[in-house]
Length: 147
Image (cartoon, rainbow, N blue to C red; front, side, top):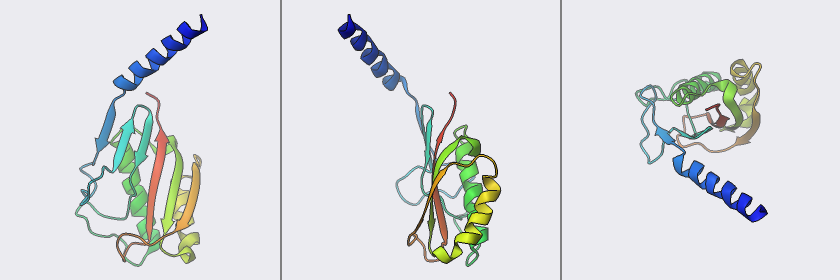
């Protein structure tokens, strides 16, 4: 009996996987990627973003030299990316923050906290060189939405 039950469960899981809708989206409100990636992907209830940065819709860096302005624009871009697949900041369960200079941590954190006042995901913050020298901040996120 156990073997049949296990087989039935495995068959059901395979059917679920085959039916899972995967959306790969580059929202019109964000600068379009110059490389081969999607800015946000939803697979069933799981949502992941690419590394998002402080670009306006024309692909120009916002807030050059101002980490607070870059964090704000980047997180606004994250809100737009999440919205494109039916997710919100409340659905975010993990963020990874990339700072060009850890000396900017306090200012970055102050702006970040404005976006995640009550619903605070797990988070890691690391210092890393970013794709453009004028960028000071980047973020990627994982979210889970109700289907």
